[in-house]
Structures are given as C-alpha cells and as structure tokens.
Image (tube, rainbow, N blue to C red):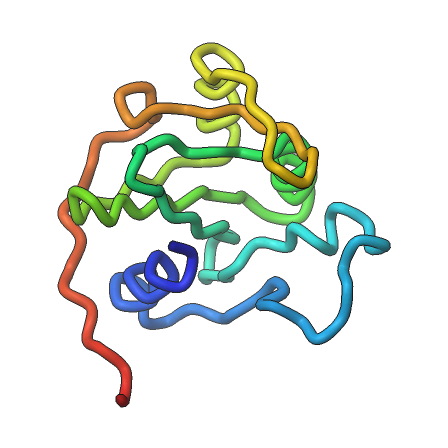
Length: 140
C-alpha cells in the first residue's frame, strides 16, 4: 500500500525530496519514535507523511506515529497524504486535522505485533477525495 501511495504522491508532486526510512537494512525498534516516523517527503513548504488504505478503507494510525508526526510540526508543517487504491482517490490535510478526527471518530485497534492504533473510516476523513492520476508502471 505504501509504495503505491508514494508513487501517486510522487506523480502529483514531482518536485519533492525523499525523507524518512524506507525499509532500512537494520532493526529500527531501538530508535526514537521521531526518527522511526520521519515524514516520507519534503516539499518546499511542508513535510508529508504518505499512507495507503487497505481494502477495508480504514486508515490505521498508530498512536506513536501520530504523536511523532505532531512533534514534527515543531520543525515544519506536516500533512498526511492518504491514497485510497480501491476508489483511486487521495486525501490530504494537515496532521492536526487528521489527529482531531481520529480522536473524535477513530476506533481503537491493535496490530499483531501489539502496537495500538486509531482506525478512521473514509467518511470521517478531514478532507474530500480527489481523483488520483494514473501512475506509470516502473520497468519490468
């Protein structure tokens, strides 16, 4: 989901800089949350975390990730970009708006590794869907 979402983001915003960790060759468990959850992309005026939705169309925001992204707003504005592969739409809004909606409407859940999250359905997202562009396939 994440790689597809990043491909859509990169098509919409070709003038970006890649940040964050992308499957590093070491275990990140011992790193602080702010390093583990460095936003994926930098634009001229903001940082952006990019996420994708599963077929259930529920955004699963880990509590520690949400806290880290809010902390990143002390450095620069942070947006969350969410790609809905099922509907081929995307949503984008400041992380504070996502956090507010998640705390109001999110349902508590737990991943198999034990990390907790707030599950937010698309009907409670803080922005309206925008049709996503077609993303060219990479080399075979």
